[in-house]
Image 1 (cartoon, rainbow, N blue to C red):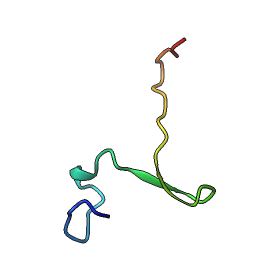
Image 2: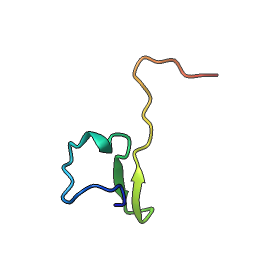
Image 3: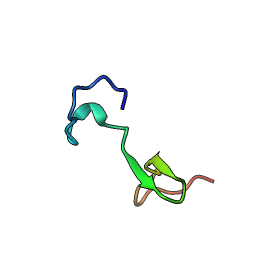
Image 4: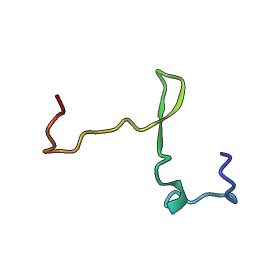
Length: 45
C-alpha cells in the first residue's frame, strides 16, 4: 500500500477512512465496498 504510512498499519487508523475494500474472488482482487442505500431514503426517479 503506497499511502506513506509506517508499518504495520492499524485497522482503526483514521487516515484509512474511505479506502475500505473487500476481497471479491469472482473479480480476482480487492475492490471498494459497494455503496449501500440509506434505509428510509426514497429512490430517485
